[in-house]
Image (tube, rainbow, N blue to C red; front, side, top):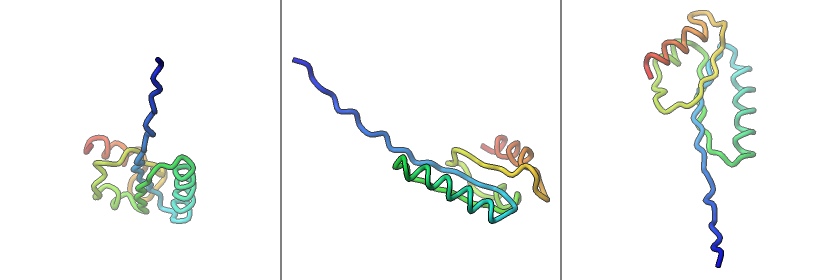
Length: 88
């Protein structure tokens, strides 16, 4: 007798940070990410930052992905990525 195994559905909880000094862009990117997650039935926690200082002083210890603007006034995205990498 062959026994059928039911595969349990994998539930994803996406934790994402977006940092860009243009609020319009962060809103558009967040909407696109929300659409993708909704189609896949993934839960989403999306933190949005409009300055380098705000993202660097936040607790992102459970964040999986960060979308960083390369050209910002205080720091560029590569500098932010370096600081986050060191911190986490």
